Amino acid sequence: MTLRRFSLTAPLVLGLLLSSAHAAPLPCPLAAKLDINTYLTLSLEQWSEADQDQGSAAYAECQASQLTDTLGNSPQLRERIVKLRTLYRTLRELEGSLAYAMAGGGTMHSHAVPRSYPEIEGTLSSVAALVLSPVGGQTAGRFTLSLNASKKAFEDRIKALKVWKPKAAASTSAYDAKTFGADVTRYAQAGAELMKLLGSKGDAATAAAYLPLQSPLFLDEYLREF
Image (cartoon, rainbow, N blue to C red; front, side, top):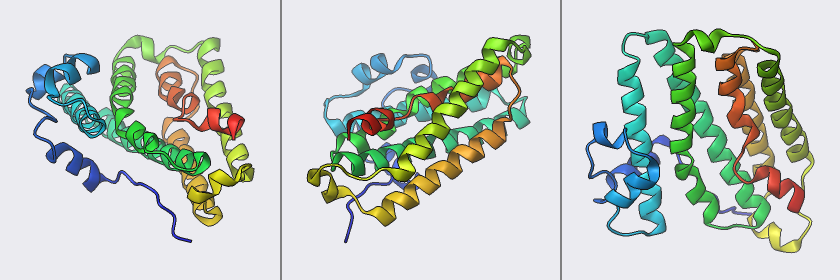
């Protein structure tokens, strides 16, 4: 069975940035100071799905560039942020792919992936700011609780995905058991790599970096629905 699926690899993301004349008309230093809605309103001449994808990806790249410049004097943190960004994006791509299979298809799942990048950059900026602040290293019971909740949410999701199968015949058109299982494995590995990178210290910065594990694209809703 040939399964239709999508993959937002690095070359494809670069293609999103270069393929539209409307994707990044604003200078990055200015774009980095705007919220995503303002940026899209000012930069998109057409409000198509593809343009919104391209605009979101371009905006996120500007945010990433700004953060890299900000961390010029903190090379270790800058490298850590790059690794986090890669893992967060990998998780979102796999969530979109898994959700596509679970729902029996739907282009909204591929659109959601690049549109999640601005939020990722917001998380990375928060984590970096906390690491550079005395507040980030503060420990508290509520931070440990948040961190543990993020871990549990991810681990429970993995367990549910490993045993998931389509309940309705309509879902099978986009579902292939082998491919789905391989994506679940990759998803579990990316999450494990993220947790290994972050460690388990119950401080504010670490708890903040774990938060994306609590809010996947589509999956928690689909595990209840399908």
